[in-house]
Length: 285
Image (cartoon, rainbow, N blue to C red; front, side, top):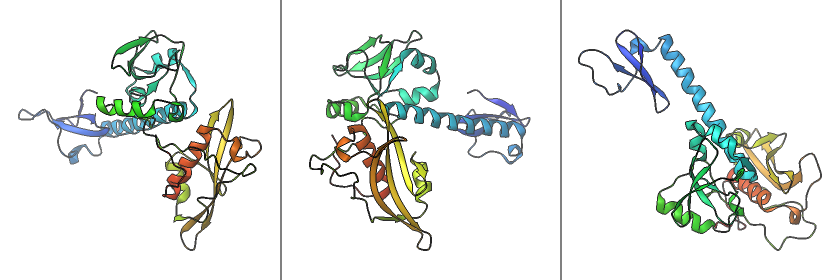
């Protein structure tokens, strides 16, 4: 953004999300001052700019959360919607370089731009920039990317970074040795973790409900919820984790053999992040 006059002999602006000032005197340079001058600390324009910076931070976080939800659920997103949000730098930061699928699921590409008409500009695995014109686009969860290793390698070669975890999102594959009637993963049971587990879970984007930490995904036409139990001992300032299970939202618990690949991976990702320890079921492509 541009520079605004403040305090008579200064200009202020947002630089890297923080309020910065520069002098407008005859010997002033164009570079921002290292610290905000004392004369400006109570200036109402500085306060308004500070509030704007906070709002922009919240907006950027909301954009990241929404795009992360699109990736987790692998839902088709109307390209007209992408065209409307793309001019916003916060949305661009969340969407740019994500792997996107158009009408042909066998031809993934890295999203580099969206036209006003909703056409997608993507870089394919041949390194060619192509334009796609699908009605909807899918930002797939990595468990649905058969070329995941190749995509990761190619992204590294191009120096592409993603604002939302997709290519380098941890994935877990459901074991094939599960009992037919098993409904709970016990790998994390008894693990003791530091206090403020609920706050940590909320920071990571998980929901706390009673004595469970939960995450939801949309898969196979239904909402599935993973739930990790815990017992908190306020005297010891620690929490002890319990079992990990899955259920249809507002519905019955699922047997482990019934849990879909995305719900399984995201539930294990949640439990591993909160326990601070990986398990033998982790499989990174």
